[in-house]
Amino acid sequence: MSEPDEILHQGRFLSYHRTARGWEYVTRTNAKGCVAILAETDDQRIILVEQHRPPVGRPVIELPAGLAGDIPLQEHEPLVVAAKRELKEETGYEAKHWTALLEGTSSAGMTDELVTIFYATGLTKMTEGGGVHGEDIRVHYVHRSDVVKWCRDREAEGKRVDFKIFAALYLARSVSQGGEARLWY
Image (cartoon, rainbow, N blue to C red):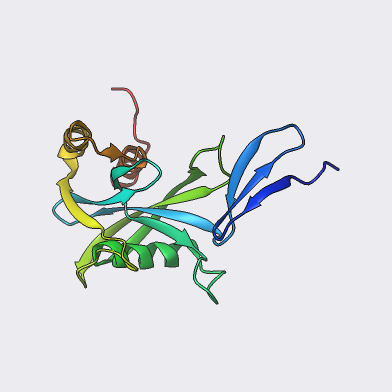
């Protein structure tokens, strides 16, 4: 059996570890997973969110997303329940149809965090959204066919764009077309 990893620092939400071979990584202490949602309106608009992210020091364009199991007494919250909660908190929408697209690592060299991407359709606007606890989230509606150009334009303005947007669009195409999406045409 291998030695347990050394905990170098334990914060409120993250712990910093080192393996016996010297690899350092971060793990979340307050959640069981992370969810991201590709939400598409009936008129094919993708709902994206923008918020300032301190680690990169600028606004980031992202899919609505958040943690699962991070609320006291809801530590065993199912991922789809967390996705529904986050979509409503950040964008004000509820969705009738939910499809899990993929679970993958967010940054395998730095963290053990797994992100599950959901595809949400059949949307109904319920509240204003904007996040909770001072998140100050701005909601954007971008037609599916314009997402790549729109995101490049935001990058030209100095904002960052989370690549999970493009992975989710690719994966959702396979669901909406009833088969495998092709990478090369």
